[in-house]
Image (spheres, rainbow, N blue to C red):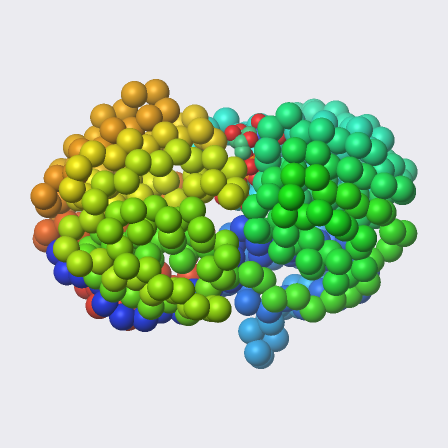
Length: 417
Ligand code: UD1
C-alpha cells in the first residue's frame, strides 16, 4: 500500500490548476443512465472514484471511454443489468446515485445498501422515501435494495434532512417520471445545480435547482448532451487552507469563486489576503494564521468536507478555534492523528477545541477517510521534519495529481511504494 512522505516546514508558493469536481462528476456520470443517447463530459477529473463509477456503469452495459481531448463519453444505448453490486458500492457510497436513474429508465434496480462508513452512519432512507412516494415498490433483502416501478409518478416530496445525493437521486428519477415532482427541503449545493444544468441540456425540465424547492416536470425521454463539470470547490479550499497554514501564497486557476464564499470568509478571518477573479483565486498569508471557529452545515454554510482541513490550520494558529460538526456524527478521526504531530485538540461530543501550538513535528500517521487525509497532508506540510501518511488510497479517491500539484507549489513530497 503506498504512503506519502512529506518533508514539511516550508511555505507553499506557486500556482496550480484546479480539477473538475468529484462530487459533481459522479452524479452527472449517473445521468447517462437516463438516456439512450451519448453524454459527453468535459473536465471529468482522473480519480479513483471516477474509475469506480465507470466500472459500475460499464458492468451495467454502458459504454464509457475517454476521447483524445480528455472528454468522457458515456453511451447509455443499452442497459443490460441494472444492478450495483456490494463490491463496488462498499468502496464508493456515491454508487447509490444509480438507483433513481435505473428505476426511472428500466423500471427496476437492484443496488447494494451502502452500509456505514468511517465518518458516520449515512443512511439512505430519504432516497427510498422519495422513490416510494413516486410509486416505486422497494424492499431490502440480503443487503440489497430491490426497487420496481412501471413508470414513476411525479409528486410532492418533503425531505426530512437536507441530503445532497438524496436530492440528486430524486431529481434524476423525477426527470423521467410522469407529471410534476416538487422536492422540498432540497440540498442547495452547487453540485446539485451542476447536475441540473446537465439534465436540462439533456432535455429535462427543471426549475429551482440551487434553492431548497426544486420543480421537475417529467418528460418521456431525454437526449444526448455535452456538459463541462464544475471546478472542485473542496479541492480549491484544500489548497487555499494549505497555503494559509504554511504561511505561503498560491494562485489557483480553473476555479469558481461563487461557490467558495464560506471558505474564503474563514480564510480572511484567519488573516489571509484573498483576491479573486472570474476563474482564479489567490491567497497570501504573512506569518502565522489566527485561529478560526466554525460550524459545518448544508450549503451555503461552511462545508463538512472542509472541516478537517481547517482543523489542521487551527492546530498551528494563534489562539483557540472551536469547530462544531453538525452533518456527520463521527467526523473527527483526523484529530487523533493530528495529535500525533503535536496538535492540542480536545473533543467534546460534536465539538473540537483546537488550541494552536507554535509548531508541529513530523511523525507517521494514518489516513482514515478522504478529507481527513487532506488535513494530514496540510499538517505534514506545516510540521518540521518528515511526516509519512499511510493509507493514501483515500486521497486518490478525491484529489487529482496531489503530489504533482503540491510539488509545483514547492512542497517536498513523494510517494513511497
Ligand atoms: C455528499 C457528498 C459528501 C459530503 C456530504 C455532505 C457526494 C458524492 N458526497 O454526501 O462529500 O460530505 O454530501 O455535504 O456528493 N442522511 C439521512 N438520510 C438519508 C441521507 C442522508 O439521514 O437518506 C443524513 C446523513 O447521515 C448526514 C446528512 O443527512 O448526516 C447529510 O448527508 P448527505 O447530504 O446525504 O451526504 P451524501 O450525499 O452521502
